[in-house]
Image (cartoon, rainbow, N blue to C red):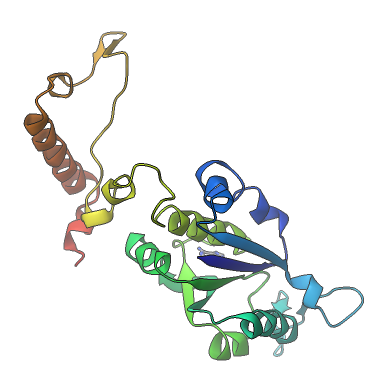
Length: 226
Ligand code: ADE
């Protein structure tokens, strides 16, 4: 998979995507991530990429030309399955969306900023708009990092234990059961006996019951999703 991210703040994305599992995924060629500075596509010497809005609202708007140039340059090199714009008014991101993106070959993520982007970009160039939740960030970079991270860990081979991503919370619309490690007792706080029993049939049953109970109690809305 290849992910191209277009942003005015490349530094905000380099570090989050350069550690641990996501770093190794790149080293092992499971994913290629390219971060493009939108200012490189500016049409003036000040490297501006924003301008005042028509109609006189407060705040600046990202201009169409640098974004079109950046996307056109990428599209000239390869086909893209999705050109994503991160925005609070996009579809709400969840594990199902992550699963859908994880099977794609090439995606672009355009990070929004300021008051927004010239709407013609959304009408003519963007194929999917994603919000990571009902709150407003200062820019789309953190949203792009969230999307990239959640997608990359689903690519086969990225997480060493093959089944690990499949047993995450939200796969099957269920929360994961609690986990424990040594010591089995700490300050009198005990790990559930069944987990120490060695009876794997009972352990599996306990995990299923815990998933079910926790989902009903903490996220009953998940049980209504198809
Ligand atoms: N940009 C600003 N807020 C955002 C959000 N909630 N999701 C995605 N992109 C955003």
